[in-house]
Every structure is written in structure tokens, then in C-alpha cells.
Amino acid sequence: MIRVHKLMKNVVLLAVMLSMTLLCGCGGQKPTQNRAQEKSSTERSGSLAQEKSSAERIESLESMFKSAASRKDLDDFERDVLNRAVKTGRIDPADYETAHDKYLECMANAGYDEHDTKMPDGLYKSSETLDPNIDSKQWFKQVTSCSAHTTDTIESLFRDQQDNPERYKDTGILAAQCLMDAGIADKTYTAAKFNESAQILQAHNDNDQRALQEIFGFPVAGKQGSQARYCLSLGGLNMSVNGVDNP
Image 1: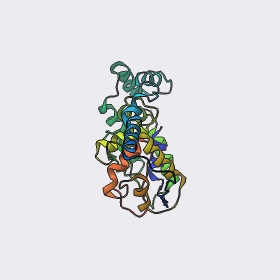
Image 2 (image 1 turned 120 degrees about the vertical axis):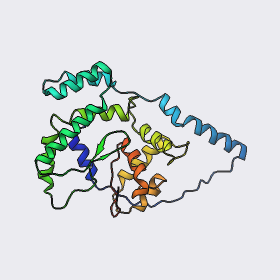
Image 3 (image 1 turned 180 degrees about the horizontal axis):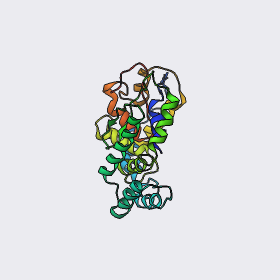
Image 4 (image 1 turned 45 degrees about the horizontal axis):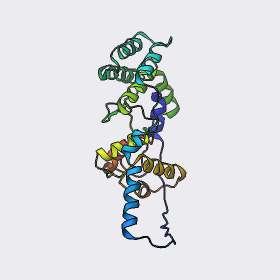
């Protein structure tokens, strides 16, 4: 995923309205002990740990580094960074910082004052809003130009390294683990639950920030939801919430 795609997603407005209806089953009552045993069994079989143990994996980082390093369109800086990654098995955070600095310098030389925020995984995130006085088409064009031979390849690989070192195909696992580690979701939360909420979010397009908490079960909007939004981004959901000042 190149930086342009990331930036475009960062400025996309995602907010939804969810009307929830409580459904009651009409079947007969089961004994309390049986219901408790059934619930316990369901929780064990659907735990995040179980999801991880049976999860499909994707291409290894080592393979990705080698493939990227063999490209013919790299410049000397990119080739040096990727050759080091092949040798050590990881992209040095200092190399990513250098790539990002080169990108910022290019944007500054073009007249754009970028203010990126460093996230917990060590990657930089662009502002969730774009200055209304800026020509967005020209800005995206400049982003594309400045990303070339700075962050477009290196950042994508660094993101995979930092966010998904275990190489899970289902990135809902990453989001669920992040939410649990942050104390936002309890230990029963699963990737399946995240993916279900994400599908509901994507199926609705109404503009009510309060609905986000109904969908996910925890605050997502405003400063209170900043950590939650970061965790959701690990699962592929990048959002800003309409009408709320995001950090």
C-alpha cells in the first residue's frame, strides 16, 4: 500500500447510523447449567487465541524484503535500506525515519507544510483533514511525486513489519489484540466480532458519530476514541468522525 493510498484513506469521512433491534428467541428455556456450559464452550471455541492458532498466514517478511530489493526501479537509498533488511531480517526504524524525512523535505520544497503524527507502531499518520485552501488534486499529485523513492515502498514494508509480524491474513486479529491490550475491549473480544462490526460500518452511510459506539461497543469518536481508532486502523479501518475534533 503506497503512501498516497494511506493518505487518501485518512481524509475519507466514515461515520454511520445504526438502528439496533433486539430480537428475542421463541424457543423453550434450557436449564441454567446447560446454558452456562454452552456459553463457556462457545467462548473457548471462539476465543482470540483459538483464532490465532488456526489463522491463515501470508507471505513472510523475509520473502517480501527480498522481492522488493530485487526491483529494478529502486534508487540507491531504497536499495541500501532493503538490502540491509534482507541481511538483518527487518527494516531499521532509523531507515524509515530517514525515508519519512526525505518525503517531508520534498513536500516542504513544494510549498506544503506537513504535520504528521507518529503512531504507537512507529509509523507516521497524516492529518485527518486537509486545509480547505489547498487544491486537493494538486496536493495528491505532489504526494505521489514526493513519495516516490522515499516512503512509497519502504513505508509499506515497514508497516507490515511493525503491525503484522506474525503475518496473519485476517487483520481483524491485529485490531482485536490491540483493543484488548489497550483495555478497550475485554478478553472475550475476537477478530470475528471486529469483522462483524466492520461489515456493519461499511454497510451504512449515515452521519451520526454516536452510532459508532453502538456498532463497536466502545467509544470511537473524539480524543476519547483516539486509541480505538488506531486499533481499528490495524484491521483496515481508517476513519475520521464527522463533527468531532480528532487528535
